[in-house]
Length: 340
Image (cartoon, rainbow, N blue to C red; front, top):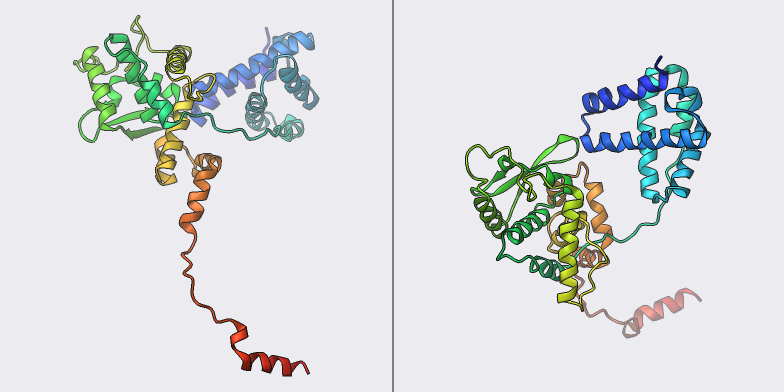
């Protein structure tokens, strides 16, 4: 079967351009792949066009707009997800227009499709008290409970993304002072994150108990399930959800969130550091953000932090005894005579 221009370009985009030239992470490639997988399903179900028949001539601006509307109306995706899919399409057509100059005009029209505005929501996070209650829940008299505590503590203390935690190997942990963990973030960028002594002690105890400090285990996953396989995102989410449910029962007066996803611990770490007065640049480096602009979302979130920042920047005004004009009769008489 003869390949179409769309199929050839899409294959090169996913298998050559993204990993080879852009050096993006496997998760980003997977997200882009899923976008076009959904587009192929849309074309087959709504346009009666089989994937192998799709060409650039059939991928028009109206068609892309209809696909985005289909995602929202039929698949009930959020505005954020809709915008994420559009970002993948934009990235593809920036590449495709250089490979296929004949589609340059249509590509520019597709690149002109705007992202949808969304209402800025509050950043979901746990307070320091809520976090302490959460860490109380694992039964540390059991091996699984000690593992779960170590997993949650490192997820929070390192400010790690869930995939960064999943990808952690034993060789990424340094227990000697200063204790650090090497995280591999987006774009395969690595960063060294310091961990506190309490977190280091919990992690070291977990690693000794599971014989992870022995030679030959350096490439083993740091956190694994009962089958000695690296955790998955749903697995970690399940662990957090289980202990959140227990914390709600134990401390029913606390206003816990309805659900707890791994990224909320990362948000919590950033906000707690800001509350403690840590410089935004250090928080950016800890979280692995490329630009401090990304980190500023946490500063815009908390009005109390804004108030404290304004108070710190406000100059100290000392009250002085200012003479009243009524007491300076000569000046008042002069002004009165001036108007006559």
